[in-house]
Image (tube, rainbow, N blue to C red; front, side, top):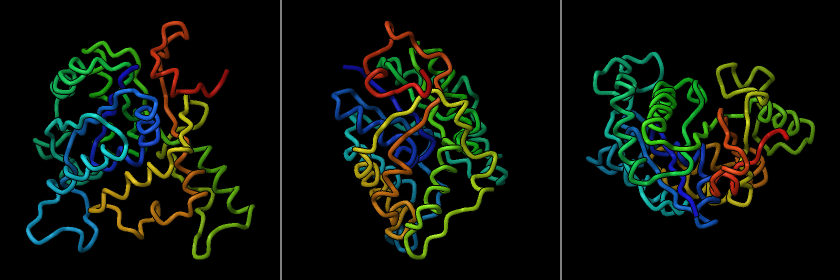
Length: 272
């Protein structure tokens, strides 16, 4: 059996990005470890979700441990940086936020965990952080450097398949089976900075069988996703279609003979 470490920017990112991959890995007997760069201090809590005096960062940290239970993760760690906020916000300039961290310094923090776990695969985000969030971009940079320092054999950059998303939107419109009250975005959505074209994506993880586990992981992040959140309110078939396959870019994939078991168990090449 192998080990997969998933490096995330904020609590709940693991639920949205790699939860299917991680749940599938745990079910197959592999060790799953979650590492968060920040505790999501600048998230917007669902109205009424926090008790009087409850700190958002403390609540979101606790939600990470609950999510780990749902997904079968064996360990949760935090690197100790502060949420940077959305790109262009004044909070990007705070000297203690993750966006301002030195890449080598942050990578050494992550490398300590990687050296302890000796993972076969590290998941990060693509070079634009999937949608341009500064902390996600920093996860890409720090994760890449930490993998070099710790000698991790495979780095899998989670991304959004833009072409897959557009095909799904067109299919929903053509089917006439859009749930009442739903509107599918037009052809200008997603924006050009959202995800990657399919031609740049190298691997996918088929996790439809773990879609409900993925959504259960989302539900425990109740400070950020209330019952009416669009991802939680999706009908099961639409959720499974939209979130049941997770996409990755592996820039230097191992040869079949040298590939770790956890990689071959989970990651399917997009092209022969």
